[in-house]
Structures are given as C-alpha cells and as structure tokens.
Figure 1 (tube, one colour):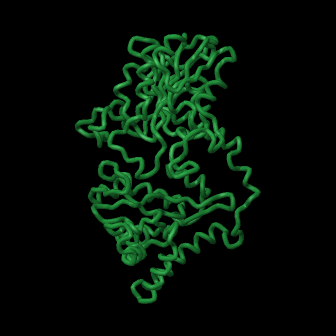
Figure 2 (figure 1 turned 45 degrees about the vertical axis):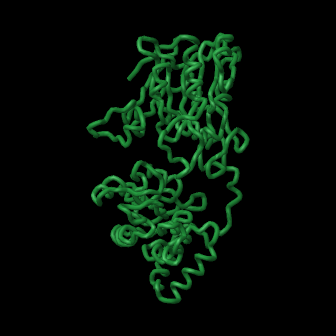
Figure 3 (figure 1 turned 180 degrees about the vertical axis):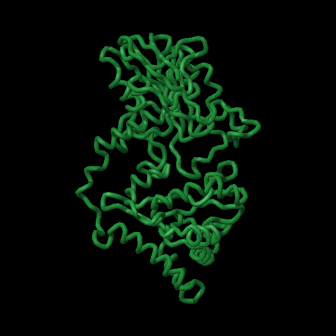
Length: 442
C-alpha cells in the first residue's frame, strides 16, 4: 500500500538519503501517512477509540507501514484521534518525539487531525490551553484547526510568551514545515499550476480507475452446488433484470469522502458510469435491460428474465458515522435478494467499504461478487460480469459469518469464517461461441 507514495510524490533518485522527505516536481504532491499509530486496532473497531495492545504488538502490527513510508520519502505523517492504552495519541510525546522524530529520524511534518487536539481532554475542548500545550509538547508541528483558528493562535502565542513552550519546540516545527515547502518549490511557485487542470478526470485516469475496479473485484461464489457456473453472463440474452438500491447510484458506488464528507446520493454530483449504465452499454443491442430498484413477486412472475443482476450494499459514511454493531446492508437489499433470487438466476454485487452480513442470503444466490467502493467507473464491474476479463481479486480481510464472531483473525482458535482471508475464485474463460463458454477454475 505504501507504494502509493511514489505515485503521489515521485520516487527518490538513486543516491538520495534513505528516509529523507522527497517531492519530485510541480506535477507531484505531498503524501501523508496516517493515522499514527494503531488506529486500525481500536477495541471493537470503534473509530477514534482505544487500542489496547502491548508495545511489542503495537510495533509488530501497526508500526511497519510507517517505517516503510518513511523509507519511501513520505513528507507528512498525521496523528490519530485514537488512544494507545488510554493515552491520547495527540499527546503522546514518547511515540511522536522520542520515537518518530528522534529514534527513526523522521524529518517531515507531523500533522494533527481536524480539531483532534480538542479531544485530548475527556470533555472535548474542555481545557483548550492544556490541549494546545500537550499537543505541541508531544511534537506536533502543524495543527489542523478548520474553524476557530484565532483561538489556537492566541493560545499558543500566550504559552510561548509565558515560557511554557520553549522556542526550540517552535523552531523544530517551523524548520520541518519550511523544509517541505522548499522541497515542493512553493516559494518559487506558490500558486496552483492551472495548465494541468485538464489532467483531472481525463480518460487515461478513468481507464486506470476502471482497471483498478476489475482487479479489485472478488468472486465469492459462482454457481449453486451441483449447477454450472453462472458467470460469465451472456451478452446476447432476450431480457435481463438489473435491480437493487446500488445499481444506479454513483454516490453509493463512491462512498464517503467523495464531493462531501459523507459522500452523496444519486448520479448528479460527479461524472461517472453506474453499473446499470455499464450493463446497458455491454450487452448486445437486441438484449432488453429492465431496471427495477425493488421488484416484487408479481413483477417478476409477469416477466421472463433470463437472469438478474442485483446490486446492494451500504450507505456512504465517513469516520465515526460509519461505526456499526450490525454491519448489515440497507433495506430493501435483503428483500430484493429474496424476491429475485427465488424467481430467476441471479448474481449479487455487494458494494461496501468492509465485509457485511451476507450469510443468510448466500444459499439463494447463484453468483456473488464483492465490489467494495468501486468509485465512478462502473464499467469495470460489467467488464467482469460478462467475461471480458477474468476474476483474480482476493479478499484483503476475513469475511465473517455473523458479527458475534468479531473480532476474528487468521490464527484464532475459533477461526470459522464465511470466506477466509485471501479467498477469491479465479476463473479462466475460453470463448467457444457467442453464447457458449468453458470455465476453468485455478
């Protein structure tokens, strides 16, 4: 995952100091490794809560990605809202200054999360002077204060004037910030390079995003026991059904942190291709594609569908708003699966930012695909469903049977997943004719 740093910043040339921040020109941007450290190990997965683990576990499980990021020249590291064994990370001098800055010699900028220093106290913003003092003394160089920044400036200034925070600490922060600005050439070219605006969303980037969709899809099931595989679907069929809450909704495809903090709903906030539109553009012109978000049994009985594509999943969310004790798909997703898969051969595409509860429905489903949050390029899903490319994706984490099993990790004595870590059916298709395929499983 840390290879993305090279894409954002460029790859440091041979002979560059290992671990020194690097930005390779005006067509590159500063990367940020976050959230330091342990935010992925909080109790019950609750966002911004406590990571209860000993030092050996923290350094073995959660620290390696930061070490690798620094080796690749990352310029900034953002601190986590979370705590480690009860101590807020934004006030953790041992891990920020002693380890990150002094022991492993990170020379970039240590950044706070948005209004995160306010949370150093039990009551948010309960003692702001202490919060500012604790954060700066811990080693933070740049503080994200999106709204009431004058309060922060005044508070920090008073702490420095009254010698609670020494100028050496301020000088360290300023030196780091200036270093990265110099590396980025911001003093020579402080304004945005508008000549590059046409690079945003160009066709080459969309083609790459479409390829990423194809490679990230995971085929979890393909055919009921004793039956032939359902996928790939034939492009030449008389009538197919596309159903589900997520079949024609770009906002649902993209998830949170898209246009808005918690994403958006619908198809108008950005340019893209929904899975419905992708299916329509893929099938033969003679194939009738019928879209019904929530088809009932009467509708299904009155139509002669050769097969159905159901697209369901989660609502967009970001950060703490996404915390869930149930991890279920939104309604009427389960009802659609029950109605449609009971009447016609179906492939279910799940759009979610994480595994969700699907075991109650798996038996009725002919084919099942995990599509994650695929973004704007729904054509990548259609590429796979209709066999233009083979499935190669593998699960990046265990898919549980029910939430009562959580937390569950590889190696646990009670490890009994619905689909294990690394699972993914891989098919090789051989096209024998327009309507006949031979499927080979690796």
